[in-house]
Image 1 (cartoon, rainbow, N blue to C red):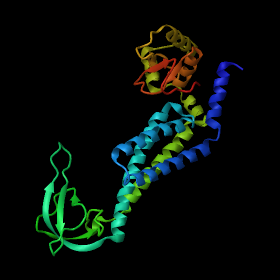
Image 2 (image 1 turned 90 degrees about the vertical axis):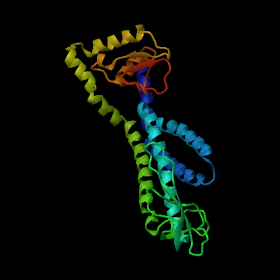
Image 3 (image 1 turned 120 degrees about the horizontal axis):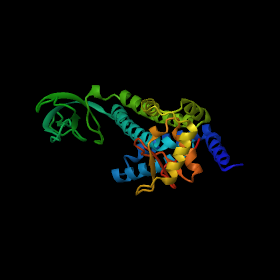
Image 4 (image 1 turned 60 degrees about the vertical axis):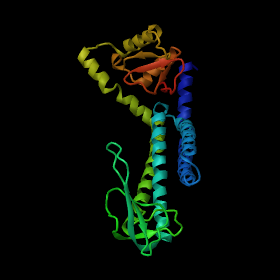
Length: 302
């Protein structure tokens, strides 16, 4: 069996070996991380949480790459991590509202002090209110916070206070966890949907569809404007010559312009590069194809 055939068989095996159970396992792992970080938020500081998220991202990209769609795994991983951070944060807000609903006590309080956040460019300035009961004792917990200047000193209002003083008081209409719960669930489902999309992207069906699409719109436009009548075989030989003769940049990459090869897709160019002893870089190309002996994220040959 030739080297090209072995590479194709290895790539097919990577894409088809238990993809659904692997995707289910990754989904369960992501949900576990969201739940774990939701719990960890009350136990540790921002530095520890940031470190855990970084470790999670590194492990997740390794798992996502095993689904087969390596050329977009980095971006998908970053998207999933951001969604997970958002879901963990929003679910935390929902938990606070539910806790206040369960153990909170509705009282009448008076605004005894008001302060406004310092101006920071165009950022909105929140208002903070210190509240006191009718007997003059301060309402326990943090200050009441609003996104606008709603109340004045001396004004009376009905709020729900936390008897344990852990949560800030809130007005009855604002203590509703429905929106936060739906928002956190939507973020988590979007993260799971991204995993499903990456599973599809790594399948043979998706790769076959991409191959049928052929050249990109920019490559077709270049061919029409320049009246390029070269055949695909001629373009392949031209690319081989470029890979053999073009100098590498300071990072060790050989850069070529995709529009110069209007009948080739990047995976097809990756196969040609593989035959020349190089790999195609999938990360951070910015309009160019990059090839090198080592790459950050490889485009699977086709």
